[in-house]
Amino acid sequence: MLKVLFAGTPDVAVPALRQLAEDREHFEVVAVLTRPDAPQGRGRKLTPSPVKEAALGLDIPVLECDPKEPTFIAELKATGAEAGAVVAYGKILKEDVLGALPMGWYNLHFSLLPQWRGAAPVQRSVWSGDSITGATVFKLTRGMDTGPILAQSTCEIGAHDTSGDILERLAEDGSHLLASALTAMAEGRIVLQEQPQGAYEVARKITHEDARIRFDVPVFAADRQIRACTPEPGAWCMLHPQGVGDSASQPEAVEASSNAERDMGDAEPFHVLKARPADMNDPQVPNDLGPGRLASTKKHVWVGTATTPLELEEVKAQGKKAMRAADWARGARLSADAYAD
Image (cartoon, rainbow, N blue to C red; front, side):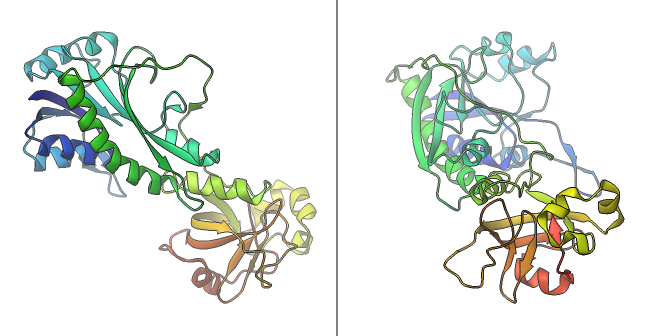
């Protein structure tokens, strides 16, 4: 039986923790390492991470100390762990920590390494239009996601999948991949494969500003951006329900409007939770919408892009709950000049 210390933080790491904890034939999860409780919500109440909540429910001791602290290695060794399993922990483990466990540390990463090393592999994969992604179990070394590979599995990216959809599938599939890879490693039945050398794209973290939707791009690009940023950090734009007056009747005029004109309106943050390229076989779809211009019927809401329109399906206006886009539009009192940017 392999004694494992599990390191992770968000929801996506919970399936792997549960898989290891429930496989008592092969593993003993001796402790869980996660971030300290953090303020959440409007009340800023200190809230445990999803992994901590799961660990407490499984009666597993929890460590919340920073791996950079001088006392961490002593606390780590006191757990009796032989190996570490890492899933979305969120902190870099330095070389002395990596060398503190006799069998090393092993990470479940949600991409087909060496492609998309870094913090947001699924989001960047969706945004780039990849048709396939996957999960990789590899041994942690000094480099960022560069260690030798134990096992991989693949996952298709559907035409309408969000990053949240993909992560949910990978979290479940990856939990089994991690368990089987660690079992094979402990029993000496696996040969680690070095990652091929080369220049690969890095999956840098997606910021709030990155998630601001661009409508001056082809519809497929706007669609990918929205799906990549859903559910986190959330795709958004600024909504101008009354436009900027008569000059906004043409897309070129919207572009030329001064910042002062825009600021005079009642622009507000607007989140797009679900959208897809409009069906251009539908005669109701307007084919002359400029980038960012809005149009709606009783059942549909469209926004223009640099090519064909994007249909909004689910949205969240400022201070409102999430709702079907058509329901929102009926109560939004949009002018004929309404636009988003």
